[in-house]
Image (tube, rainbow, N blue to C red; front, side):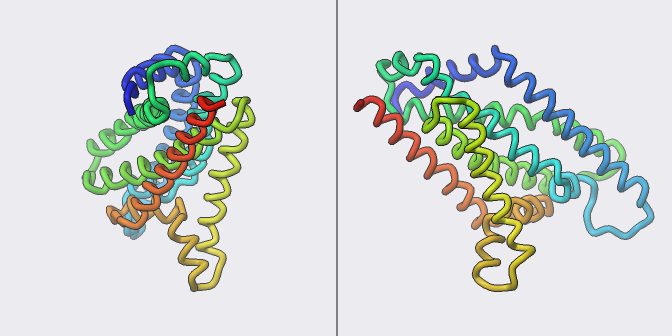
Length: 248
């Protein structure tokens, strides 16, 4: 993994100098802001009703905007990682640099993951605003962000693999969307199939179930293991793809 730090710095500069990250950040925060506002407004209108969860838990676990945002955001962040390098020809210079295949993959992945975390960071202001009007359960907030981190980490690794096997950013984007949306649809099977092994498997990969559980402060180690697997396997395959370019 030698040289990964240089690749990390290069990718961070490339991401934040170009307008892509800023456009994604603006659109992402607009969507999350609307989602949070609607959730708080809903609780304000039904303040007298009995509810077993608060606006923070509802925002992280009940809003359709969050899973939809992840399905779009992660492929958009990863589509250019290798596809653009191959299209422009800069991949040749990268492959001849004294950096291992794992160094290239880890450096690019960590830069994208850092960008993903930075995009979520401003949403902490929503929780701080709520704290001024009521009580906030910070362990629940931490668990909610952990769930988002695990899901995003897996989606980003999958998107990186799609970028590595494509020469076009558009194709990488479409392939990532299809794979991630496929996982999303598979998770919906939890609400479709009868109780049994198939329903249990769907529940295990369900984004909704993970968001709901973590938004209640329930940290399920099995879901974290699945997220870690969804990170490790695509990164391993991506490193093999990068290695194959050097052998050509």
